[in-house]
Amino acid sequence: MKTTVTALLLGSALATGAWAGDVRMMWYSDGNEGEVMADLVSRFNAENPDIKLTLDNVAYQVIKEQLPIQLAAGQGPDIARMTDIKKEAGHFLDLTPYLADPAYWQTNFGAQMDWMRPDGSDAITGFMTQLTLTGGFANATLFEQAGVPLPGEGATWDEWVDAAAKVQASQQTAAAMAIDRSGHRIAGPMISEGAKLIGPDRKPAPLDDAGKGFLTKLIGWTADGKNLKDVWVSAAGATYRAGADEFINAAVPFYYSGSWQVANLSEKIGDGFDWVATGSPCGAAGCTGLPGGAALVAIKSTKNPQDVGKVMDWFAREDIVKEFSERALFLPAHKAVLEKGLDFKTEDPHAKAALNMFVKATGQLTEEAQQIPAWTPASDVYAALVKRVGEAMAGELSPEDAFARIDADIAEAAAKVAQ
Image 1 (cartoon, rainbow, N blue to C red):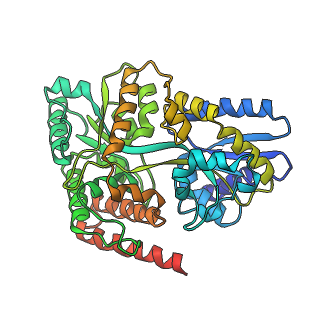
Image 2 (cartoon, rainbow, N blue to C red):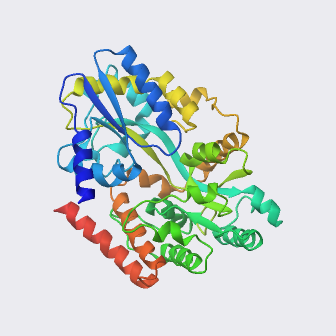
Image 3 (cartoon, one colour):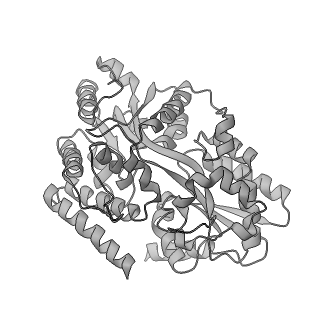
């Protein structure tokens, strides 16, 4: 009952603005970007007294689990920051008639527009607040104290886990590694091992031997205490859970997540220990991470599309994107901002080095990985992976049963979409 009441209150509080000039933006944060956004919202309201923009900060789980329900019911905020942007693209507003200069948007955000609109559409629905890339982080201090060299460029997943396990044994950490409880996070390593998630017909391919091979290793690393089990078994279903706190608390020497964690790690680790970004460990087919990011999108159910257009134009401005990216320590998606360069606002040498490592790692992306962000079934594949792999880690399914159910779950999701 508590969950139901909370959901109803949330839905009511974040409902589409009913009065002219009222615009509500639903926002989640991984690091300090919520503070940066709150400051920018205050400035927007001061410069635009005819519009009242309200920032609703919510947990990421609300974005993942409750917002899609609201959108399906024709409700929700006027603007939202989301990650499942391809799957939910049918609920987004085409901003083209409400923008001052649609050509500016096409020029500067065009490379990612297919990520957030239905296949075959030329709609402008929003822009990426940051580009992200999955990758690893290592606690360099723990490695040094253990006398274990950090694996070098080209090191495989096996080599990274073996090295981290030596650190675990020496420093008595809770586990050798943690990987976020996320299908998105384990898809990149699967592709590095040669897995093909996208079939020849663009539909999800059945799990192949390469994909099963990495998942079998991951489940095994969890069973023998190398991968931190709590991150995966403390939640159920497709629920997301990050392993960042465990890395920040030095409970694991190696952590696999992504570039969006840089600001969070910088702020919370401080001078507690030395840490480095490692890029993605290699597999038989490459050393790829998975690109992606979060987008600020306009919601089709808004009652104030003209005002929403003004808000989106303001936040998409070159100077605003540059400031937001530099203060939040994010990689921007704005073409001109990228071409002119950024001066990230941090004195932390670990953060600056990590951001540069992620920029370098973009050169390691495989063709399969680069197709994923604009592939509509990706979210359903991620959900099946995290749910069934989590059950296997908890001992509820054998790896073979988990693989069979992953294929069945994906087929069931595809059938629902086809109805």
